[in-house]
Image 1 (spheres, rainbow, N blue to C red):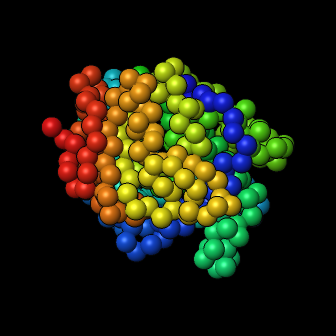
Image 2: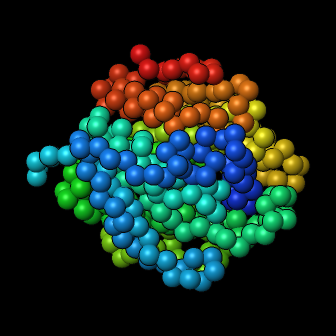
Image 3: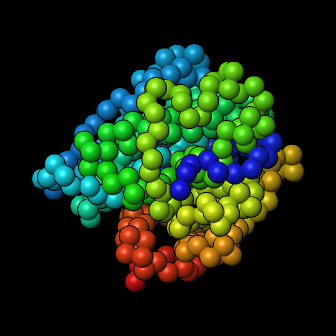
Length: 342
């Protein structure tokens, strides 16, 4: 499957910065982009971690040049010819915070289970003031649009780098999974289902300002790869019809039923009438099922934005990814803390 398959819808990106500020709540499991790991190092003799690999460089929202880096996690003692399923992780943090270390614990667990994983840093925005943070409706749409666009540029650049070096990092290009939480879930879902045509209409003149989504940060050409599964924790799309029988991928969704930022089903972001209308995990899950694609959804009925712990996410994602690899994935809806593992 290729990334960026979709039609266009003008203006969705206006709300993306808005709704991820709620991820700064102390009650959210990924409130600072670090999950339960708090960004600390994970030491495990069975796992090799290669840190701070530079995959590109570009200017941030303030015009400062940023060296973009990623970390790779893999099982230790691999032979030169070993190729393993790959997990590409994008952290949360409202497009203004968080970093790649948030995935340390989860990707260590995945590496122990026989996966290679990578977690990336991407360009963040520090231009918003306290008033804008307290009232998302005050955020300038051009700022929110560009922040999301930059994150997608960076994610795609990181993938180009990793896939060009697939042999070095033992990546099986035919078995790629995308994984993200909060802002990271938006990045992976929208990078997978939307294309340059969408962004050209949503943000007129964006290519002249920031360049194309497919060639920013580095000049590495795209290597063919196949996305076979997605894990999206508290994400959304502008319209479920961007998912089609030709591009839909097996997905495990997570969401809080009382998410005050993005409705679990559909509605206005922040429940503010002047914000964009979006489609959350429950609607995307229903769309997946209607297209005949395997999907699982975890809904915490009383949970807010990002209600699940890192351990819960990792264990259920691992079961889902393994079921996709074994071609035995089953669909289902799970409430509260009920596990979807067999």
